Image 1: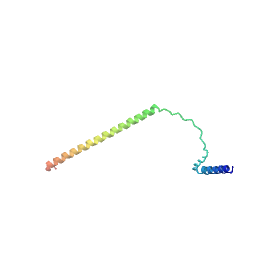
Image 2 (image 1 turned 90 degrees about the vertical axis):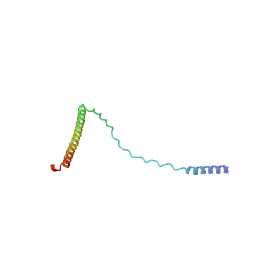
Image 3 (image 1 turned 180 degrees about the horizontal axis):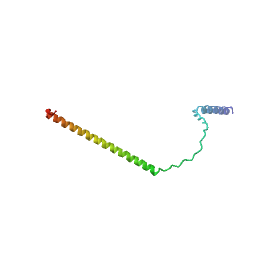
Image 4 (image 1 turned 30 degrees about the vertical axis):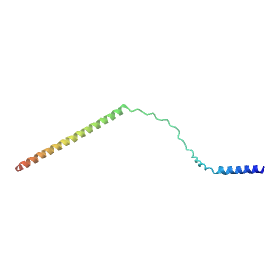
Length: 103
C-alpha cells in the first residue's frame, strides 16, 4: 500500500511539474474606457441640381472654349505677321545686296 501511495504522489508531482512548463499565455488586453456615443442624426436628403445651374456650367464651358479659340487665332495671326515681317526684311536685304547705290 505504501508503494501505491508513493507512486500516486510521484505521479501527481510529475504532472504538476509538467503542467507548469507550458508556454505562458499572452497577457490579456487592458479594458478600454467607455466612450460616449453621439446620438444618431438623420441624414439630410440630397437635392438634385437645378437646371439653371447646369445651364450656367454649360455657358461657362462654352465661354471658355470661345476664349481658347480666340487665343489660338491670335497666336496664328501673330505668327503670320512675324513671317510677313521676316519676308519683307529678306526682300529689303536682297535688294540692298544687288543695288548698293539704293541706300
